[in-house]
Length: 164
Image 1 (cartoon, rainbow, N blue to C red):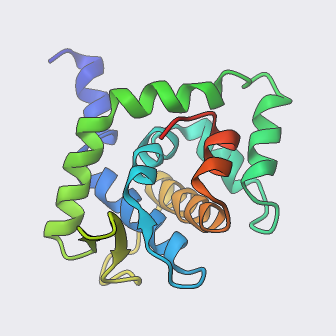
Image 2: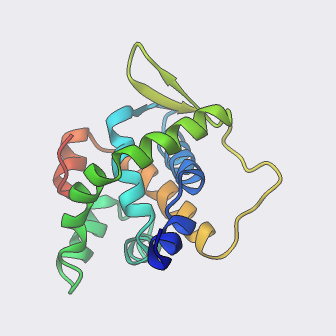
């Protein structure tokens, strides 16, 4: 493993991914207690692991929604950032599944096999409160989850330029 691969693994690892998925699921669930469609989880890590995308999400008011984030990305020099999500979601499939398994094993989330939906088992932080970059990533994915809960998969696919 090269130096840069090791650096990426420190941040883009399944344990941090599990926390990001959990916060996304909590954000989604916070609106009308609806569970998350399983395929939607695959867009979380490509967004949550990108500092520039998290910064755009953090800088967007919760009331503005996913359409405003998409608009900000398309109207700026970060235009290709949003196109990155679909490609990276495919590349990160294995990492997302590993992260999901960790979240399930940690009793943070559960999967309904009948409906292929995911719901949180815990919605609040236990002992650890994240700080710094981890907190920003978790806050961004939670906000993303809340926005996605207000949209259909078709609308999410349109705004994030992804295919499910």
